[in-house]
Image (cartoon, rainbow, N blue to C red; front, top):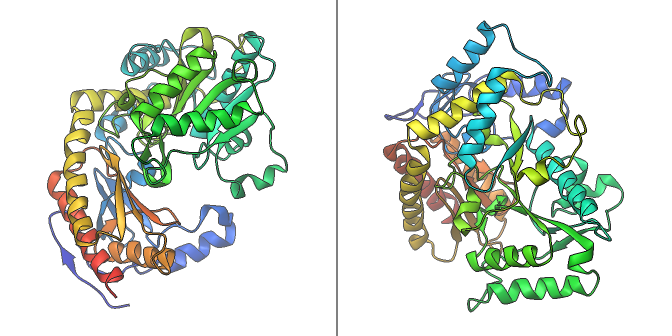
Length: 444
């Protein structure tokens, strides 16, 4: 492969891409590791710092992925490293469910960060554990309220994780085939995609979905929870505000808990501390992960005391829950967001990023749409475009060769979510690479 030399303030490419040795490393991994972990873009990481990724040859890339919306406060954040280091020096790496000072401090700060309406938290390691725990809490609430059935309503196309309840709540039929059956009390309604909502009829759209459900079930007697991905992940697609307002009203009228899956949208990503705040409502539960630990495995469910205290003592614990390393990392994330005003920075720089992407759209008015808020965006391409998925794979690989890493979704979209500490000039440089490669791939 021909070498392309690139040297800018934010990018440094001095070898062919993929870098020498990448293929050998991929083959070695494929021999010993489950193929389910493979399929990513051909870049072998050696280190990551702030908003840059470095491969095994020392090539430096702008990161528009935050790994997968995890490194909100930046890669290898110095405060996180410092707080983890002090944990190691304290000789307290793990304590199971036995109490310790850092756990008490972190959970208190976490509740404050969440704001009014949130009183207690339960911590875990993975996002899918959090959605499973929320599923359990919603059903326990239904039992306490003596509901006839323990129904959960979800949205088609949403994604909540890879464990059993999480996948049954998710919208992908193909992804949950392995389960072998579907819980008849988990229901799905149509997602209000912008191309389906016409003439400002978002409330009518929701009422139609609910009316169809009511032919099979009684909301008040048969439903205990609604589970929503704060925005639909693959396309950074937010709900219309009126849709969520009406949904909240329906939940209150029928004694149904409203849960938001905030994995991708939490911790400043959307220009607010949490994505649900864009809708001017307060849900009963939120499920968090990804950016919560800044690279350390940390997730949680946060909500009202009356819900969070439904399980008896020991009924919902976890081996690694609230371990000192994770709590220190979580505390560092909260402090970084607050001290460096990262939520506000995501809002301002997100507007810049959206504006720059929309400039490209003007050149290609029928090729794609841009969605998102803050520093999360998706470019959704016209699905009628011939060989769209093949072209998009070429597109993201071509961007890597120019020094930019994007999230390739495997369908008709590409996602963008840089660390919240990214600079304005790096955003503009990254978007120019996107523009160059859209012109290159789609003008053929």
